[in-house]
Length: 106
Image (tube, rainbow, N blue to C red; front, side, top):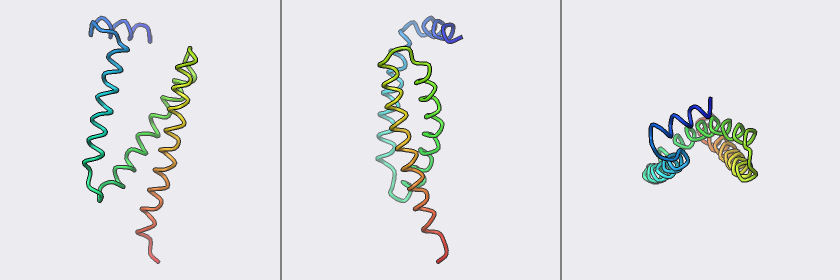
């Protein structure tokens, strides 16, 4: 199935799929950078809570990528992704916990 999708994308786009994926990744990084830095401080904590939820989904893909990787380089990149996403998820939970503690009655 994966080879079929790879061949179909290559035929449709008439470019290398790896080049296409790299281009999408770099554009997403640029857009994400500008979106995050333009957010007002009042909206920063809710934005971090949403990115925490997104990271929770992405880490599943990183784990599958690690398990299905054939080369050592791919395994290393997937392992780094899992570690960085783990830090992001943990930090997001700490931030959300701190934010919710501000609304507790004393």
